[in-house]
Length: 291
Image (cartoon, rainbow, N blue to C red; front, side, top):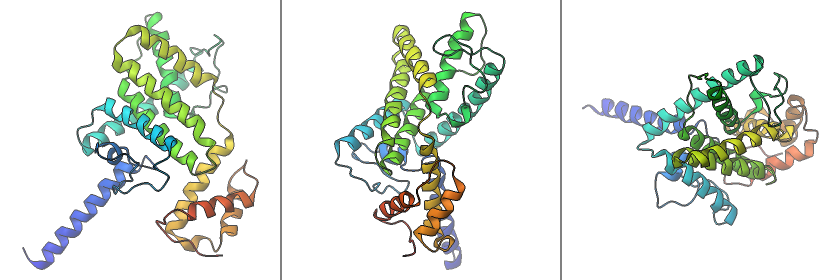
């Protein structure tokens, strides 16, 4: 092989490796489940490159969250990175399908809330529901349909709930990047999703029935988190894009002002600037311009 061909081959290999890391971690913004849990000797969150996620890995809270994700990951019995990617893609497709099915069932008046009252299209904003909530609603609808002899063609599997748990862990890590309070609701959701997944893998009809009722009540009764939460997530994603292209904004103040123009519920420019300072204090993966 010529030197030129060898260089081209090496470049192609590196590109494919980088693409694999990107495609595996892309749906998870704050850690890589496969890298984190595929090696039993590691007891901290890892990114797609296998590097530790920079937060206090020795804190009891971080350890507890790590264990929740680990237990969900073990339920999946992942054999390889390709296995993880393929099955996670199937999970995402199923969640999209369930959003559509639930919307249609509600439109047809076939959905009820935990009090037995009919759900209306305006009462459940599916676009703002996490996968764990969507699957909890789906679980109830499947059981309700069985009672009247109607079969819904999309099955609900324990592994779907396990993947939902891994996503809630990602949401916990996002909450930790803010003031910590936003992590609480996601932690509860992660615990519930893990319990729901275990109910499926457990094989006990009684246990599964109890979890189904609890999961549905939590999904329907749980008011959407403070709308500022979704906007914080949006701001953080914009911040990450800024780190990759520093020329977008000349200062933290300019960034904060633009964010306020793009969101509805956040009102404090100083708060956004404080977030930026906090995110900057972490070991950098990019460079932000100084003010």
